[in-house]
Every structure is written in C-alpha cells, then in structure tokens.
Length: 101
Length: 182
Image 1 (cartoon, rainbow over the protein chains, first blue to last red):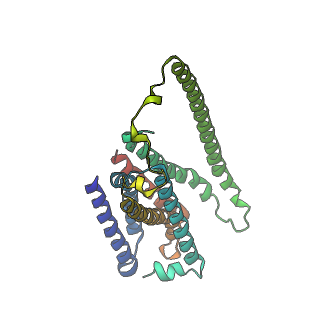
Image 2 (image 1 turned 120 degrees about the vertical axis):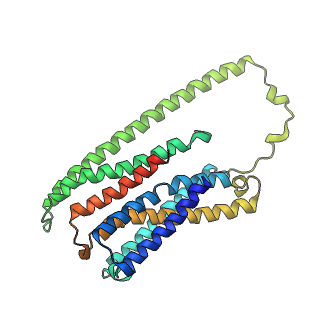
Image 3 (image 1 turned 30 degrees about the horizontal axis):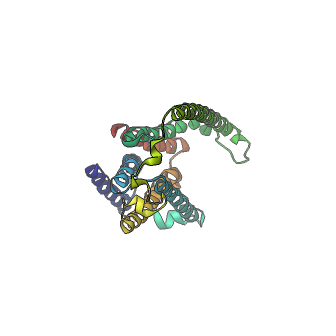
C-alpha cells in the first residue's frame, strides 16, 4: 500500500506540473484538456481509499478521528470551492490569473 | 463494523460515487442540449426532469436506509432479550473478577487513544492528517466541480455537450481506476 501511495503522490505532483506548464507555457488544446482531465480522474480516484488506509496504519482511527478527518475534507471542499468561485466571479479573473497563458 | 475487511466495501462506495457521476452526466446531457436559447429562462424547464429523477432515486435510497435501520433495531432488541434470559440462568462471575484491565481506559476522544497510548504522537499525526484531508478533499472536489466551467471557457470553443463529454471522461477514468484497485 505504501508503494501505491508513493506512486500516487509522485503521479499527482507530476500531473500538477504538467497542468501548470500546459496552462502557462504550452497552451491547452481540446485533446490535451481531455487527456489531462482523464489522467486527473485516474490520480484522484485512489487518493482517498489509500490515504485512509495509510491513516489506519499509523493511527488507531477511532470514530472521533474519522469524524474529524471527514469534516476536514468537507471544510476543505467548502473553502477551496468558495475561493475558486470568488476568483471566477470577480471580473472573470480566474481566466486571467490562474488559467491563462 | 467490518473491521479488517473494510477496504472492499469502502472501495465499492467510492466506485458507486464515480459511476453515479458518469451516469448522471449521461442522464442530464439530452436535457441540457435542448436548451439552445435559455435566455428568458422558460426553456430551462426541461432540466427539472433529470433533477426529479435524481430526487426520486435519493428518496428510494433513504427509504432503503430506514428499512435496514429498523431491521437492525429489531435484531438488537431480540438479541438483548435473549441475552437477558441467558443471564438470568447463569451466575454472574464478573462481580468477583479481579481483572484490573477495565479500570483505567483512555477517553474515546483523547489523542492518546488514536496514538495507541502516546499522546503527542497521536495529536501531531491527527493534526497533520486532518490538514492533509483538508487539502486532498478540497482539491479533488474543486477540480471536479470547476473542470466543467473551465472547459466552457470561450477560448476553447467547446459546446456544452462536448464539455459534458469531458466530465464524463473524467468520472469514467475515476471509476475505472477504483475498479482496478479492488
């Protein structure tokens, strides 16, 4: 499991680098968008089960800790969605700041 | 509940999430492609249909949960009754037990319990893992939600239907990866 998690973490950092370089340097096309989207799905999918397995290895995951971890996930989703939404609506600056070449 | 065998059921829950996202994209597509000019808002009525279907499915799932909950409650009550009858017929040996193990137990809310007896280890690792979960959950959720909006940017010139295919592809690869990890 540790090997799988290492592969996923390494893959995720590679994917982030590729996304950034495509967005800022190379420029995205339809095909590259679709391919990168599909690879993102492949990377995100096993992240949660593997991470929870890893937590279980290191700690005794009692219901209280599980609740805190899940609420941490939900708060993260809420916060980052909110930040992305703010960028998106504020003069469409998401386009200008984050995703433009 | 499942102890050491929790991986497979948890994985199947995740698989259901991915597959649901694929199917819901396929379900919604015919209804959004009909809305060619939804400027006045009247053509948006068709979007109610897939939402209603989803709502009915959610309702059915909720009913299923209630059914299993009631069945579990009944089982528990029956078990309690049988236990009580057994206890009446036996001598209570626990009253004379000198085993001191149960006297001092850590609180179920203490980091010491998470850290298998080590307070600082439990607290530090719990905090790091909660922050990790915050980042992972946040990024995966935000990506899946905003990828569609990003695909719809003017410079890519993608129609709603093509963008929807992009989302389907994302969720399909998500589901396939979970299926492979079984």
